Length: 275
Ligand code: AMP
Ligand code: FE
Ligand code: FE
Ligand code: ZN
Image (cartoon, rainbow, N blue to C red; front, side, top):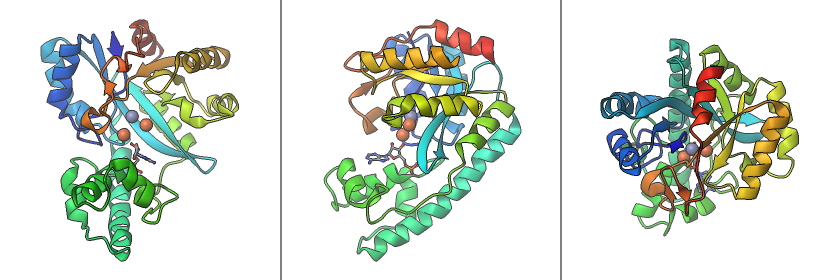
């Protein structure tokens, strides 16, 4: 069993890199992709621990991109070689734009009468703080009961406290990943919505290499559909649970939601061969 999509507390997961590796070993995984949002810090910390324990850790990242006014999460895998240094610099630029957004979002929430500071939010995160970290502060201070309520009332793009962040264009992210020696894959394509196939066709024309057909949010029917779309457009296949630890308590590493995942090992061999 393998799992190519997981998060540590360097982004919005709750497990430290060491705890994530322990969990992967306890689960009996052969390979684990560490794919934090916009940072390689979780992978960097996990890789030597995994190597010492005989677990195959795959370097990855999940970048939030903009395409036709919508947000698309793009995975980048560096399964065959480490990412070029310019790619790390590009990710660092994203930390800068996140911080700038967080300053504005804390101010906006204060203007709505909420007692919240940037320091409190950043203390919840490590390499980066995002809206999930704002949500944790709002829950802890009793402004809302749950993370979902925090998003619905304050943080969702349609809510009062929302502040936009500069996000790279999808095309740029695809190019950056390719230039750094990686393979790009659209995360949880179920979120593309109705005309997913047409959108994926457009993405393939922009240089997309793979599709995350296996994901905890996909029913067997969705998975079959995305496998077929990948075949039609000549895209490779990736898959993972999108494990976030206690931040998404119903999702298990490797097996997903109620055992709805079984990701074949050959996907990873294929990614390595492609890269
Ligand atoms: P950010 O990168 O700071 O914009 O935060 C995005 C993250 O917030 C996503 O990866 C999700 O984990 C989470 N998120 C976004 N929208 C919602 C929502 N409506 N409800 C719950 N979580 C959300
Ligand atoms: Fe996340
Ligand atoms: Fe995602
Ligand atoms: Zn994810």
